[in-house]
Amino acid sequence: MKIVVCVKHVPDATADRTFTEEGSTDRESVDSLLSELDEYAVEQALRIAESGVDAEISYLTVGPDDAKDALRKALAMGGDSATHVSDEDIEGSDAFGTSLVLARAIERHGFDLVLCGMASTDGTMGVVPALLAERLGVPAVTHIEELTVEDGTVTGRREGDSATVRVQGSLPAVVSVTDRSGDARYPSFKGIMAAKKKPMETLDLADLGIDAGQVGRAGAWSAVDTATRRPPRSKGEIVTDDGTGGTGLAAFLTAKKFA
Amino acid sequence: MAEILVLVDHTEGVVRKPTLELLTLARRLGEPSAVFLGHDADSATEALGRYGAHKVYVVDAPEVDELLVTPAVDALTQIAGSTGPAAILLPSNPDGKETAARVALRLESGLITDAVDITAGEDGPVTEQSAFAATYQVTAHVTRGIPVITVKPNAAAPEPAPVTPEVEKWDVTFGPASAAAKVLSHSPRERGDRPELTEADIVVSGGRGVNGAENFAVIERVADTLGAAVGASRAAVDAGWYPHSHQVGQTGTQVSPQLYLAAGISGAIQHRAGMQTSKTIVAVNKDQDAPIFELADYGVVGDLFQVLPQLVEEIERRRS
Ligand SMILES: Cc1cc2nc3c(=O)[nH]c(=O)nc-3n(C[C@H](O)[C@H](O)[C@H](O)COP(=O)(O)OP(=O)(O)OC[C@H]3O[C@@H](n4cnc5c(N)ncnc54)[C@H](O)[C@@H]3O)c2cc1C
Ligand SMILES: Nc1ncnc2c1ncn2[C@@H]1O[C@H](COP(=O)(O)O)[C@@H](O)[C@H]1O
Image (cartoon, rainbow over all chains, first blue to last red; front, side, top):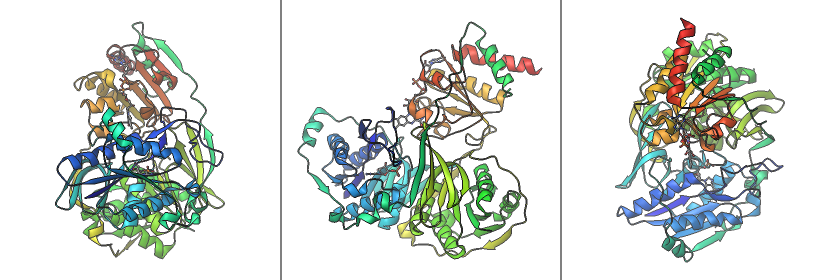
């Protein structure tokens, strides 16, 4: 079974993230890393392979040069090979552009199962998996907490906004998993060394038969007009409990008409 | 007037509050038409009309219950293809966002997710979004096709604008089931007596400092005194002290209530991502250096097991 795991290289969420003048995520000013939410997808792929399914695991990322780091980290956790799609013209793509590039690369590689994280930690749209399914014409088994792959199907539990749903798709399929699907492993020293020898190919738009105009800022179907830093919340009154902390809080809430 | 399609989020015909917010926002852009999938349209029509839906398109077919997301995609694409609306609004939950993305791709139209406000601009709707754990405010617009926008709960206060909707049944041609995810079972979550997290004016949340499932009674007591919903940090949820459906944050629910009270929560960036836009923030934490205090309009450095029971007592005393 061919498993493709889509992983994104994102600015560190704990750093002070900013926008570029064009309104894109600024990837220069802060360190980037493998999106924590994609580690769960890597983990599920490895567990499927360990469960006895004959699986070949390949990682895929679309991003600038240093996005290779995300692939190295995933390869250090396990798996077989990686593909990096990089092209100047991809810069500024919206979810449609990104999903087009990912879908073409997935088709080129061949797949039975595409695994994704539930959302990227920078854009946080959570729509790329659904767009991949739409483009590839296969079931989207998304937002899954508990995943089983057997008899040519993938089944999982989805915690929706107002209901718990058990869903199933026949393979090939696109699956996205949440941060409750199972803790991701840390790469071992051996894994880190082994990752250096695993094959990694780099592709550009021409390799995938995509025109520059279909992606990037030029090909985007929406535009950011302004991105402004929210004024920091003005620091409020902080009191130390001297035995009347609760009474004081009650007075504050009453004054604000909450109680 | 331009038609605005609004996808209805409902539980067995009971329209959820975010849909009423969508109808309210839709009226700024044109004349709202509701798209209702399911069997209980009759019970929803009155509520939809009360909030200004001039039309209700009803799609009642077995596929709606049998397949995940794709029936709504087929329905909205076909209705939009024939009526040519000026925008399509959907709720920002996993189903709504995935539906929106696929509809937008099929219509070759731009998509904006997680809007917290929408206004009518010269070239169509202008949206406001929060980014990077709500440290940024972004305005954006769609540059191609029919704007498809998902909107977060609490983006607007629902305002009634009663009309009697015209109800129109739609026969949708559904895509092949083989390319869809099948729903094997569907269990609606029990609605307790407390308000829902996304709908509540006040949210009271507990974190690792609550230190045990049984201790969440302390949080619940404060919530009930204030008529609030109960939230929890991921640490508290992961420890099994409170159900995941109550998790506030990046990978939980994102709330924006009038008042957010955080007790025993440190204020990690992923938690802040889910509550930073609350109007008033109050924190109780025994560590004076906890980052949550940077956001707090009022903070008490102290033990939540002392402070919260005293808070409840004092509110009750003031009331009686
Ligand atoms: C990809 C990713 C997604 C995440 N998504 C979320 C999310 O959606 N939501 C979320 O909440 N977190 C999320 N997290 C986790 C987040 O990083 C923090 O680990 C988590 O929020 C910590 O929860 P906490 O504040 O309850 O616990 P801690 O950070 O351990 O803080 C506990 C606090 O309680 C205080 N305390 C202890 N005892 C008492 C007492 N008796 N009285 C008063 N105060 C007391 C302590 O001083 C401390 O400040 C995510 C992390 C990652 C990597
Ligand atoms: N540039 C990218 N490269 C590889 N995978 C991606 C990329 N963007 C998104 N994904 C995948 O799609 C998921 C959801 O992303 P998003 O829709 O951007 O929130 C992520 O968790 C990844 O698995």
